[in-house]
Image (cartoon, rainbow, N blue to C red):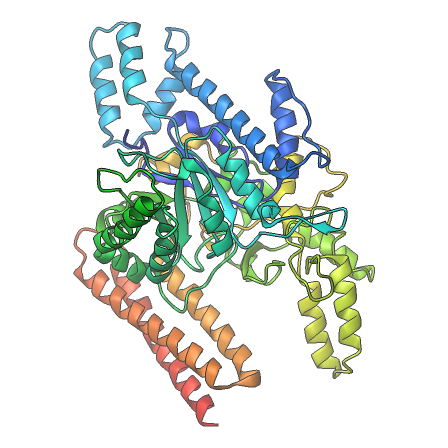
Length: 601
């Protein structure tokens, strides 16, 4: 059955979309749950079990394989509750039709379902006929899950290291694989060969003879090369990637995995050009491997979907991406943080988001993963972190240890945001006898790390008045730069009306085009990288910076040709966009010259 909507709600943080499917799946909207925090999932399972009077037995950390079992139990609960809501929506009566009408009204205006519904309800009808039509035509949104492949901490029991399948990401995958969900796992943060190989132990990821999967694989990627490498690796295990989800390297929320200057437009153009080659070459590998394994080989050609996300903000951009690049779906992330009917954000943080301007949203180094992280200034987790620094005790107590991945001081791993790590690191720093300036610089880099694996989930606890004794009340939040242009709390209908052009939720008139905005962010990123490189410039730095700059210059040329060739699209901003591209071209030429001068010195 064709999807009801042309957008999806990506994973946001750890807790912000933790129960989003329970809020939007009954309206045919796809969304993604993070599987990082099994402790949070267990707390919410208890809460929802009590709310809906469902028997609940706690899965404690004393139970064997508790992490996977908690994840399976939570996903099964969300699946059952979402199904119940959807079935209720379809049981149409004269007294109860609001949810069904909400489903229909939020669909895009060109939707075949919407047109048919209006047609059959415009004349005499009986509820039985409509109920039959609804059952045949409406679909529930997909309850997808996200696993950050690199957040795959080793685990121990009685000081004994457990086998690899008990690592965090492996256990999360097993939790999803054993659940009753018929949906997709989204892999983000790059390739994890051990995890990918482990997936082949679960039959749900393999196709039947008609090419149907019980559980699908979605790869979040930022360039074509990465998609091809990972897609082929998985195919050699007999595994098929059903969707490649392209995300802007920097114009996004959460962790920002910058490309080497590859901009979103040219990346999408490459996928469009090579889509059929990607599918054909990978299916050849897949079919051979399925045959080698003695598994069912699909009789039909398997399908792939291509979607995009990161910085999309208007109906015109949404439709352009779908049409021009032949995409199947567009991800709308950060704006949904202002939609309480869809995401789980506490009131205090919600107000901060609504008030946030460009200067309040910045790319930070606070993530313990060592990856640039989009952050909101003056969030309560950063305030909490500063209080500890002022007390002379920097670092978190690290109650959850999900990113205790650094093995510099302990083989079992420590989180770089923890008090233990920062104490040891500062102690080692003092022994280096650096100059005062050099010491302060290194000291700041150590204490800047924040306990995001707790902070990104706390908002859900606060929202539902759950116990925060272990976690504290500090909230980390990671909106993308696009948040600056939204300034009010919205209903789910407001947001869908905005996406489909029936309303405008952006009050400002100075929002740049998504391609131009990403370009500016990348130029700022490149300037910062150049400044950092000046301290110890070498051939490796030179090669990286020149490659980055040349890729961006190629991207600017692509955009210049694109905007000049477009007709009936972006007419009101075309002149402004071309002017910005010209300025950016000059800036990149200056940066190129500066790199060349440094290489001569």
